[in-house]
Length: 361
Image 1 (cartoon, rainbow, N blue to C red):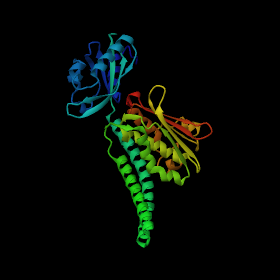
Image 2: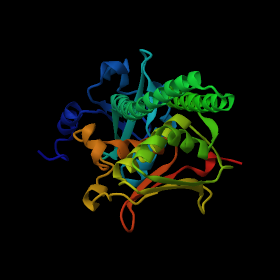
Image 3: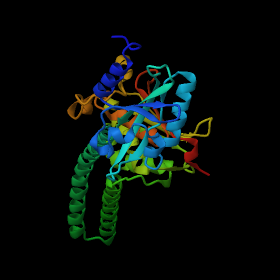
Image 4: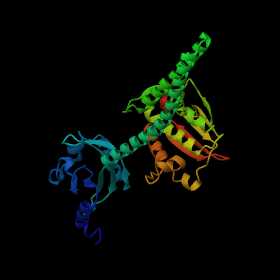
């Protein structure tokens, strides 16, 4: 069967077989043919054929203006177009996320027409958000285990010094012991506060924060773990640099980077963190360690989501799991970029780049 000779049969078969909604639209934006429609669209084929897209979508689809321009462009150039994802509000009150592609598709009379492919990606977005939240909880779980171990040691120390204070006969010894107990309790308080702040629901809330504070809050929680490995952390971040961002989401990315560095570092290793503005005025953080390198073949696939490698594997393999893939997507949602490369002499360099618009002057 040739397409030219049997267009009606071909187009109808294609529309019924495709996993997406397909519409054949003419230059006047009128719908000529329509494929099978999901029930959530709250309309039917008969109600669409002969109507314009504007009648259907002008008040309910956020990307309608771009859709109209896209159809016009396809009809003029004969080249396919992909549109920016946008929200559609169904008649049932349910919101969907649509990804639309437009293809040149003249009808059987060679009249110009466009094939509009509508793909509902709402479920994909929902699954991705679940994956991002799961990654956050996994990082929090690791941190909680570290902090719980430190809590145990700190509380044991408080108990020991409290007993020593009871036995102290000299006022000087008593006061010194009380001061140590106070310092330890302050450490416990700060650990709890930082962990609770990181665990708060993020929503889409933005805030203006010092970039150095986002890093310091995480280093407080990981300090003893790095010390236990005899790892030196060198921090050179501009203390005056303020950024406007979603701090919880950005910290999720930074936590992944720090945990990954810890996995790759050997005893006596060094992690250097630098932060400031690059030549284009964009906020930048660079994490550089001299630990184990990620093999080139693994580095090339670092941003692939591999759910087969997680949990225990990720504890000992800095290229395992979906951590960097998720981090890059989260950072992209914040308008930023993530780059991971092998460090000359061994180890890794991870660069976090935020948009220039995030700088608060």
